[in-house]
Image 1 (spheres, one colour):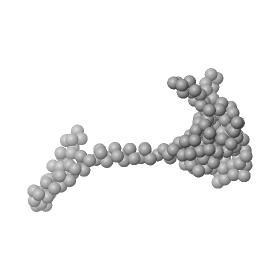
Image 2 (cartoon, one colour; image 1 turned 180 degrees about the vertical axis):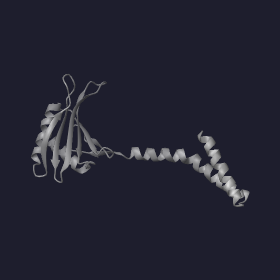
Image 3 (tube, helix red, strand yellow; image 1 turned 90 degrees about the horizontal axis):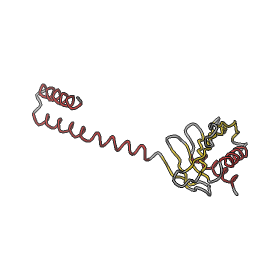
Image 4 (spheres, helix red, strand yellow; image 1 turned 90 degrees about the vertical axis):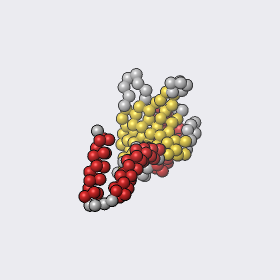
Length: 179
């Protein structure tokens, strides 16, 4: 159906051009240009999609002895890092890190998402200056291949995320985890 619509468009364009007494050369040029646009439209759409999704995740350095390279997603505005410590220990370090910054943020509470028998999953909520919501999600992850367990920490600072502030918060969390 799409191809027949394409030919109908070309046919009506050709009739329109002939109605204005344009030569066959001009009609041929118009048809050639439309053909090139249609031929490359899929290529340009794929290129734009690829660029949009590959430029959205950035590897950033954080002060974390267990994982110095973390990811900041520009789409979700979150900084993700992992620790080898137990989730309860990381949870306490997160609470201490937020409470130590009482001049710029205040801890509002926490919510546990896990039910009985599931892995640890908790979110700590805080408010920063300017009424920015800060969410720190702490969840346990186990690698099926190596059977190692990690604690994943995801920080979202504000509605759209703030990489620099998230890095500073991860640094404070790591400082409270020092063994």
